[in-house]
Amino acid sequence: MGKILGGYLFPHPPIIIHEIGQGEEIKATKTIEGVKYLAKDIKNKAPKTIVVITPHGPLFTDAISISIEKELKGDFLKFGNYELKFKVENNLELAYKIIRNALKENIMMAQVNEELAKDYNIELNLDHGTLVPLYFVDKEYKDFKLIHITYGLLSPRDLYRFGKCIKDAIGEVDDDVVIIASGDLSHKLSDEGPYTYSPYGKEYDNKIIEVLRSGDMEKIVNFDLGLAERARECGLRSMMIMAGTLDKANLKTEVLSYEGPFGVGYGTAKVDIIGYNDEDILDKIKAEEKRKITAIREKEDQFVRLARSSLEYYLKNERYMNMPENLGEELLNERKAVFVTLKKNGMLRGCIGSTEPREKNIATEIIKYAVYAGTRDPRFERVDLNELEELVYSVDVLSEPEPINNKNELDAERYGVIVTKGTRSGLLLPNIEGVDSVDEQVRIALGKAGIRDNESYSMERFEVIRHH
Image (cartoon, rainbow, N blue to C red; front, side, top):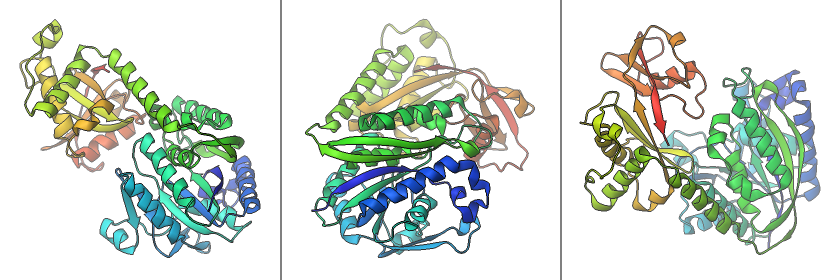
């Protein structure tokens, strides 16, 4: 009967590898010392299998990926190194037991082999989120098989449940295992990073490090996904799955290092199991999710309550609701364009609206576009009845768009933007989580319109009153 020997938070910037950094890695000395310590700790535990959960393998919105090739290979060619190559045996027995357990729990699995990689045009080789940890582990310890998992954009609860599936599968094999949650922290610590600076970056990193020091894995699963999105992190969902593998375990945690060179936060931490208990964290996770939704519902104004009532009524009755009584004068007497946005588990679930009013009043606009957001957004499947209790709504009431001459007249927090080229147009609302610069805002709007950035196009800006 196998067991889990411990878990690790392992950052994965290729630049900390000397053959790639070529001296630049000295700027991340604390991180290098931390990952070397983790590698030695893995050597001392001598696991027969290492499970790596990465953000950078084949990523699906509705499924978790797991590699099922017999041999798992990878290299650093994308980072300019032609010599570092890795080949590790896959623990297929464990992989298939994980898949079986997940499917029993109605968690979708993408079983990545050569055929799937061709069908979906995805990378078969190991990603750098896996290779960087392997580079350091390989220098200390080589006698292990690998499980290669890429998290999906599932709910925190489902990621935790999947972690439990891994734990249960390990209990059915003979191999002892360690879990590596591969991930960097915020990518917005400074303008030197891949994204523009945001104060949310440091806030996110501080809170994550504090949670890791406390060893309270429930707080990882219930972490503020809005803050995580604004910080542009990549490791939180890896940690959520790792938390599930540590279900009912008494933990001793140690944060070994934290620093933010290159505008990106790197943290190293290890988690040791010192016993087990009977506490069901899933029940606490569900209770916290319900508490959050209840608190949001209690603060809804008439705009948001109308949007929610509209979609709920339509999905239950397959027709639009009648106009409710006792609505405010603004809703009934003013004509303005609106957008209705739906989120589920902190992630976008639907968003549709118009740049100009099309109905007789704001209330009718909201009733229509709430239904459209839940049933006609081409990016998503139609909202199911069983999702209604998990949805969070917001309603943006738009001012009339005004033409602008250049991006200097924009502000990503204050103004939304409309870009137009002939019959093609794209819109992005203001103050979107994770969009902190005008350049990024315009780039996304152009992408929506199918307009290349080197084409000529016109721009308009607008303000919104956001109800949430």
